[in-house]
Amino acid sequence: MTSHSFVITEEVGQRLDRFISDQLDTVSRTMIQNHIRSGAIVVNGKQVKSNYLLVLNDRIDIALKDRKERALDVLPETMDLNIIHEDDSIIVINKPAGLVVHPGIGNESGTLVNGLIDRFSQLSNVNGSIRKGIVHRLDADTSGIIIIAKTNDSHFHLANQFKNRTIKKEYRALTWGVWDEVSGKIDQNIRRSRSDPRIYCVDQNGKNSITNYLILEQYRYYSHVAFMPKTGRTHQIRVHAAWSGHPIFGDEKYGGGMNKCKGFLSDIRKHLSEEMTIFGHHALHAYKLACIHPKTDQQINFTAPLPDTFVNLIGSIND
Image (cartoon, one colour):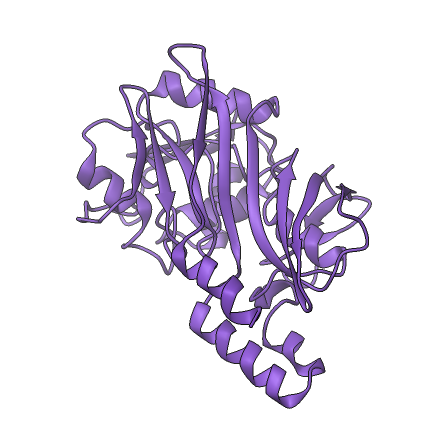
């Protein structure tokens, strides 16, 4: 029998069957739904339906008897990790853009977790082998700070801080256009799009989502913005920036990509398009993180400076 356990930290509001489908590489959605109906997959020790919507800190336990239905094998891979901090409880990584956090269908290797298990002998296993150490996530193309738990005690301590919204995060972004206000709060609920489950949208029936912002610099065509999310919904900053009419530079998924360049004169359009191609991803960076250390109970603060590519982009499109 193959068993798996997961604790929900980032996938709040996602259907149970969709979540399980993302975790297991050889099990069809239909088979997953059959397992849920049979009681082989339970949430918090209780049998639920396939369309159950996940809640923060839900524990999912899976017990599969069929040998063909195996967990994704996660192999160690040597990786050059930018380690900001390490002690007996946590690791803080400055993740580069383009690095997927954990394995899944289509990304079975080359992820941060592959690098972590190669480098560190001890990582939390609260969320199973494919998410060893992972307490929270960053989008693949978002660079910056991610905190890793070495022990299960540290994992639960950090997860509770995320749950209680006591962890403070600051992101830096380049957004299109000039904002009317130099600071403010975006208080708009977010939910998964009905037409495309890969993206999220503002919807009054969605989950409460709050992002504070501060304009650091205004330029002719874009702005350098600090975003301080109070909640931690998937794609929250990207969705809120787009809703505000200022999508993040290079964010194809939320309206900040190549099509945004089309409204400019040909020389400007060509320049912006070239810089976007060179940069190669959306311009969002997890800049600061402050939390309570799981072992010392003291506040700790970390900063990941803007990548050189990000700094160069600011200079290039401001020429």
